[in-house]
Image 1: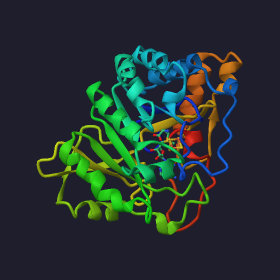
Image 2 (image 1 turned 60 degrees about the horizontal axis):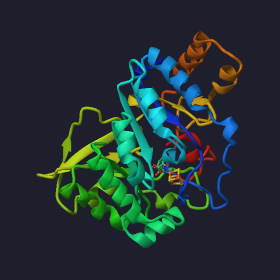
Image 3 (image 1 turned 180 degrees about the vertical axis):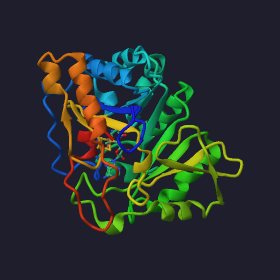
Image 4 (image 1 turned 180 degrees about the horizontal axis):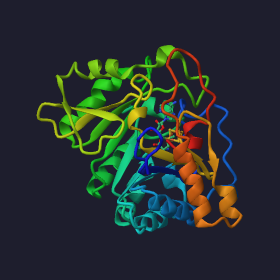
Length: 325
Ligand code: SAM
Ligand code: SF4
């Protein structure tokens, strides 16, 4: 289905939980984020129903996210059920990778196509600091396992923060010289943890790219499904480097997605608090056509673009763990 700006909406991001087994300093405020009570979270059956109706409206691609999606019990059931929905041809998952070593084989067998792993430092101490206690080696083993399980191409997402992990940009880019991964740099966005955000910590994607190019020139590559990322390759490298310029070059013109929060709200835009409640009608025996009407409404009110800038203001939006990144 097309929105009023001619964009084809065929991608649904589904958050299955707002709980997480890490506490990344830029994502969660130090006081934590109070988790939604389990009964207020959509059940798998409710999610599957929404996905089925969305697929009848043209959704072809689904990403499972959170919070930490692998921390929700029996996620393989959801994956295999989504896989069985006619029309959905691509299922991916965004994870912090902590449980990937344990679950990579199972989720691949359940029909998952790919994983995105969030990893902001390769240094054990710094990783532990960013995540408030995580072990980077567990994540690195998880990435290897995902590759072996065929969840390819593995994507590694790194949020670059000035004065914090920007001196690892080259090390991350170098991974692509050895591995067929997509290493993607994401601009730090002004929401989540207020005490961490400062405009001077934001690094625009073009600056991140020039740091990576200290290794060697990067040549643009066109990937079949590049989404909001722009991709480049070092000559002869098996992997590619990507940049997700959420703030500096708005990718709104090509935005093809809706987000479903764990508590059942359909969100037309990451950067807008406008949400359509699907949980209440679903739990009040709404018909499929009523849910379909609400999904269409979300598509109709999708804004042309967001107005978030990096100039300074922190935005008190729901943190990513509560939206589904
Ligand atoms: N827990 C999973 C993970 O970390 O991949 C999935 C959910 S997490 C909210 C999704 C993504 O949001 C992560 O890649 C994280 O780095 C990103 N994120 C969270 N807060 C952010 C912020 N303020 N700026 C940029 N990216 C952010
Ligand atoms: Fe958890 Fe992901 Fe947020 Fe880190 S970025 S706290 S792993 S939800």
